[in-house]
Each structure stands twice: as structure tokens, then as C-alpha cells.
Image (cartoon, rainbow, N blue to C red; front, side):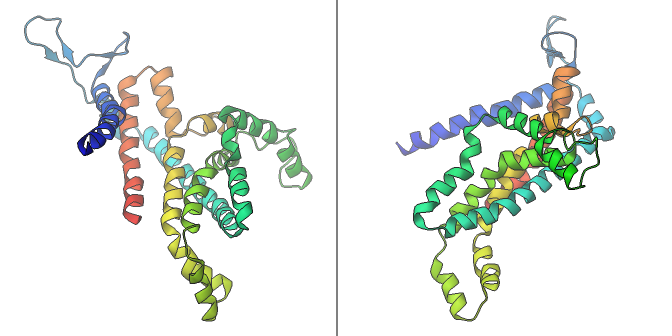
Length: 283
């Protein structure tokens, strides 16, 4: 029975993780073609007898030689890092406030933090488009405060993209931090206060260090999907926001260069293994 319990999740991971990676690796070493699918099979049987291997490393060579892909990857990493930090700066105080609220208020407050998940993703992005366009509430408020020049809008800027990502992924930061903070013994902070520590010093020396596993988990849960984000940069970021997600989409669907897109996707997956491993190590 124990072997069966282990076999089922192993089979699921094999089907949903390893098999797609093998398929991507196979396509990444193929040669582009005009057929359907738009790449040549790795084994050519048309000559009769033994098959001819048609594998190519052109996609990998272009990936190294063309700085376009590196710039898109670095830009995506920067977006993900800033977005994860923004979610942490907003989510940690929110999680701390929920933890220290009266017991009867914690569940409703946590429900309010998760409320955006009850609304469709595209509906939330369209709402931001309405708020950030030139006659939207946010842009109008910035115009009135003199923070945005007349005739300009916050829409299709990096700031709009960061707002959309932080709003979309904020619950991913709040939940692990709240889960960690809710398990801390309140007696530790009380003991620090009895020893003369101020509330700020008690937070910095007791609460914050003990909550770091939740902080790292929250950062990873935001950072990893934000690196490959496509929809928010496409709708809020404008044409200048060439993220790695948009590059992969363009290679797959616009250029129909599946080998190149697969190579870029594999590099992205390989890079995202690192933050996941660091979070696992920090637990």
C-alpha cells in the first residue's frame, strides 16, 4: 500500500513534469520546417533503410549568439524581482495585521485578502486598464496631484505592469507568511518585551527571523510565475515590455519557430529551478 501511495504521485510528476520537458528538449533539437507541426522529425525514414538523424543545434547557437533573448530574460528577471519585493512589502504587513487581529476577525480578513481570486483574471486586468487609461480614476488622480503630465496615462508603462502583477500575485505572498506567523508562540515576543526590547526591536530580533521561511516561500511563489508572465505585460506593459513570456509566445505563434521557442522555454525552466531549490533549503 505504501508503494502504491508513492507510485501515484511519482507517475503524476512523470506525466506532468518530466514528459513535457522531454518533448521540449526533442523539439529544441529539431529543424524548423513549413509543415504541421512546423519542425522536421529527428529521424528521417524517407531514404529507406536506416533512418537519418536530422537533429540540429541551431536554436541553441542562436540563443547564445543573439542578445535579444538575454535582454528579454534579464528584463523578466528584473520584473519578477521587483514584483516579488512589492508583494513582500505589501503582503508582510497585511499578514502580520491579520495574525494580530482578534481571533474572530482573522478568517474574514484572510478571506478579503483572497477575494481577488474569486474574480476572473482577465476581468481584473481589464479593470486595471480602465483605471490606468488617460481618463481613468488613477491617472486622473495623478493628473490632479501634478504627478503625471497632462495628456499622459499610466497605462502601457512599466509602473502599470508592476501594479498588475503585484495585485494578481499578492495572495501568493500573504498566505505563506500568514501561515508562518500564525504558528509563532506569542510568549517569545512577550519575553523580549519583558527583557526591555522595544516593539520594533522585538519584531526585528524575534518575529522577522522566525518568519523568514514564510517570507522565502512567498517570494518564490511570486517570483517564479512572474518571470514567465505573458498576459499582464501584454495588456498593461505596452510594446516595450519584451518579457521572456512574450518572446516565447512570438516564437511559437508569430514566427512558428518551435525549436527556438522550446530552447528558450527550457532555459527558463532551468533557471527557475534555482529559486525553488533555495526555498527548499531555507525551510
